[in-house]
Length: 218
Ligand SMILES: [Zn+2]
Image (cartoon, rainbow, N blue to C red; front, side, top):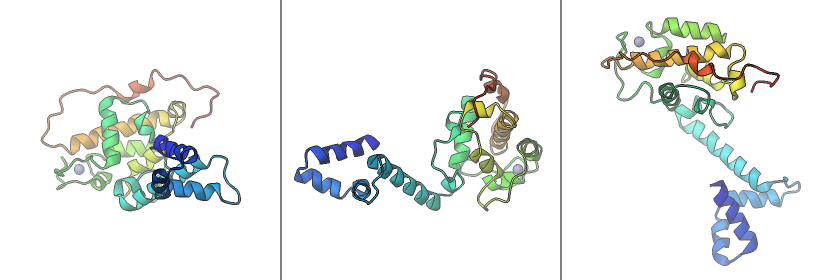
């Protein structure tokens, strides 16, 4: 999209024919670009700024519309769960949790007996408590959260953006503990499935990362 918008600008400058003018005049990013370019203090790169502002606006609008996005970070960044080291099944669970597809629909009863257990029920599920307490012990105190938000969302929103950050300090133990909680939520929310396959310890994904150096985390 960024490329096509950029091309639109180039076309507009180099070939200002009527058709392109009509298309670009109705393009909201182009309108913003013109406004920035013609302002008293135009930015160095009005194309980049117009696109960034539009994307930020879109993100804010979606945060207000969708419960799943409202639980994510306030800043629009690539979620580190997409690239931090994790086994593929764990990565699926991380993404499904973020998308509110874990527990999956239609909702099933939790193995603790809770009927049609939703994600919020896994804040208090007695069968999850020991893993959840272990995670919070490793992470530290969690402030009061908005009603829709789970402790896991809060922790995921503070996940380091770099691999170096993940193997320093508390994150080295928080990350595997968090993955164990998601594995258990997956297990508890699929009471009819058989889980007889051992999965590797989540710590194994961190074994091959470079040891902490003078590089600052995050
Ligand atoms: Zn339960």
